Amino acid sequence: MIRRLIVSYVALVGVALAAFTVPVAFTLTSQLRGDTEESVLREATTMALLLGDGDAPAREALARMAGAYADETPGTVEVATADGRSAMPPLPLTARPHDAAFGDALERGRTTVDWGSRFVWGPELVITVPAYARGEVTGGAEGDDDGGAAESGDGDGDREGETGGTTGGTDKAAGETGEAVGGAVEADDADDGGQAVGSAGPADRIVGAVRVRYATADLTDRLWRIWGFRAILAVGVLAVAAGLGAIVARLLTKPLRQLNDMASRFGDGDLTARSPVTGPQETRTLARTLNQGAERLDTLVASQRIFVADASHQLRTPLTALRLSLDNIADGVDDEFVREDVEQATAEVVRMSRLVSGLLVLARAEAKVSAPEPLALRELVEERLKVWRPAADERGVTIVLTGDADDRARVLAGAGNLDQVLDNVLSNALEVSPDRGTITVRVETGGPEEAVLEVLDQGPGMSAAEQARAFDRFWRGQGLTGRSGSGLGLAIVRQLVTDDGGTVTLRDAPGGGLCVRIGLRTVGDGTRWISPRPGAPRSGG
Image 1 (cartoon, rainbow, N blue to C red):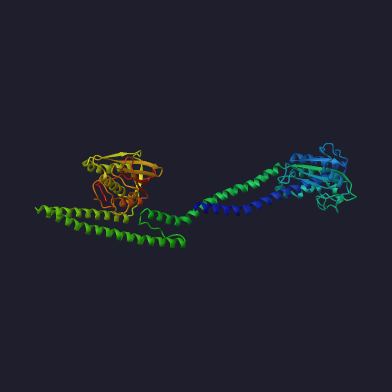
Image 2: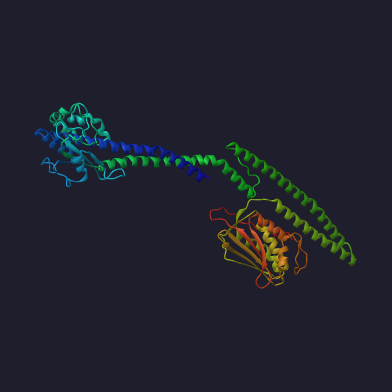
């Protein structure tokens, strides 16, 4: 959820940033192109006026202006007369004097502007301007009524910052030749306000054409700076937006994460888990509702535990007193028939005591909801086997521990649950095993997230129908030692294992007997683990 909020926030900022910066960048690019075109066209028009004057001073001024233009700017000047020959021997003649642009200028009097590409611009800007004889210009010269072509650089000095110094070199040359240019355009004082791109009238006499080739490398550099600066700025803004979005998202989702932590702890058995009542009104209401439900459930479970404790005390005490009374009666009676009856009554009391103990264990297992803890599985199994081996040795039964799981294998189980599971399973296996038989306990790794504990005996086993009913309460199988159990052992095992998130199944053991397979959740290496403590065997019957 946090990732989605951050992505949405960054996307929103990106759209807003693009909507603001992209049009500005396009506007600056268009302005850069327009200013450059206007400046180069103005210079070409000025040179065309000098060419049209026709006298020696004007031509000398044109030569100096073209040289300065080539030295100070990335542009070159080409001049041709109406017949296609070089108008000024020092100035270069275009390699293609009869191309379309020169044809339009010499034959139709049209000024052409060619950027070399439809996308932004090409490698150079080419402007071709026709030159009219003095006193016959009606189009193609852009200026003002003062006619000061030499003042073109001074009059537009403020535009140099926009065009990257396009006119920087020509201003100097124009200043040197201003006197000649002034005389050339003085006669056009009243008719000089024509369009930059136009065509000659029928009475105009075209004497030549001027072409300016302006390299656009500097413009491309400025274009990259315009777009690059905004791209870097956009990346920086998006990075800052992502950081702020992460902070805001974590603040917004903090109440939800607290509720999730509370639910996780509650699901793991920590009934004291509560969620802070913070955040918006909706999350505060939800937190209060969950806290109230958890409080009520905790109260109910606590009441059940109290009842189980009271019932344990109230039921065990009379049974213990009854057994002691029967033992005293048996000791004081010499009649064999009476002694036999007393012994039968004592056996029933013992069976009833075991039944009550099993019921109390199962009730505690159902009422007790404890958080699973990491336990060293193999070490715990070894400790329980040490406790049960003396009882097995009395009947000549051998308990064997096998499996590939080492001491590093750790499983999640509630405190004391796995000990009680092993006690019940081993008790049942020992009960049905024949004398001098073998009980095999196998500890293996069942996968990356599971450990398997199997207990195999050599008893009579169970049919498929019996295996299906074995986990029912009070159901007892036919073991070698008779029906002396309470029928609650496997029910307790399933309750404890499922509480810890594991599984328990029954199947036939190889060679006969029964195999109890218990699957337990494992934990990673970084989790805290608890060593088991040995204790007396515990069984629910």
